[in-house]
Amino acid sequence: MSQPNCSVPPLKKPRKVVIGMSGGVDSSVAAWMLKEQGYEVIGLFMKNWEDDDNDEYCSARQDWLDVVSVADLIGIDVEAVNFAAEYRERVFAEFLREYAAGRTPNPDVLCNAEIKFKAFLDHAMSLGADAIATGHYARVRHEGGKVQLLKALDSSKDQSYFLHRLTQQQLANVLFPLGEISKTEVRTIAEKIGLHNARKKDSTGICFIGERPFREFLNRYLPRTPGPIKTPDGKTVGEHMGLAFFTLGQRKGIGLGGSQDGNGDAWYVARKDMANNTLYVAQGHEHPWLLAKTLEAIDASWIAGSAPVSGSYSAKTRYRQADSACTLTTSTVDLTFSLGFPEAQWAVTPGQSAVLYDGDICLGGGIISA
Image 1 (cartoon, rainbow, N blue to C red):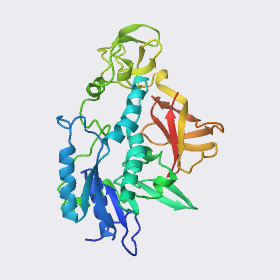
Image 2 (spheres, one colour):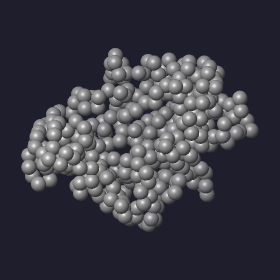
Image 3 (tube, rainbow, N blue to C red):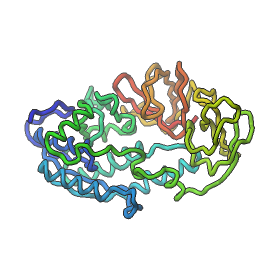
Image 4 (cartoon, rainbow, N blue to C red):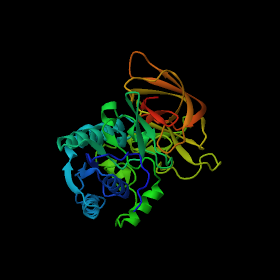
């Protein structure tokens, strides 16, 4: 079979690469591509969550069987490693703290920085690996003694947003075989080489929750603290079960039926007043409370190791969002920055990541605080 183009250059002699395999089609095809290029490839299946091994939503057993089947077909060794303790300590504990504080965290960002490119990287190096690889849609480029993180060529699948907290040291040892091909090409390759998971559905949502109802899951770990639901003018229109269970811009699951003023517009979560345990809702997608031209971010992480100079860039304030032009102002004394937008951004949400770009180069980002 002809070799498809990818972002991993062929080597003159094989090197050992450990690739994270989830049982999905992306990591399976990435493993095949690396082997085709002459790498010595070892597959590693990471078990990051074990609270629900007997739960109807848990797919870990089937995912492991899929990994073993793929490894057998393409002719590579594979092993499983349990990072559940590290995940609970480094990712899940922070996830719960953020929700309890009324923010909406993105655990996949933290999982990449703390597990997939830290615990996994350390384990792979202990196996004698020269590099690790994953099925993420992104690219790396070595330029002027630095490593740059670039968007994938398939913009609809680009995952650089989730990788923006990676460091120079982490990126220096990473390969992203899928960075220069499309998802359609990935599935085509999988079918041509006979992978049984060629049409396996992509996983969605938060990594450890799977397809389960999110509120049901969160209710197992956080207490309910009911309070009033109010409109921007202070009118009480209902009662919420706890601010932790709602996020800005949320439309479904608020518990308000019908229109309060006769205009028929949908209700959206517009603000959360933690001090008074009050949830504010507004009608209409373009309500002023849902729009913001500025944001503040904390806990900044810059891929180059230092903040970019203040100036004009583009940014995403949530994953599935087109880049928006912005002006960056960085702080010289702490890991904070602010962004100004010529066009108002919708439902800018504390706890989510604001990720900065210079063209296709992902510069890093921070956690939205306001």
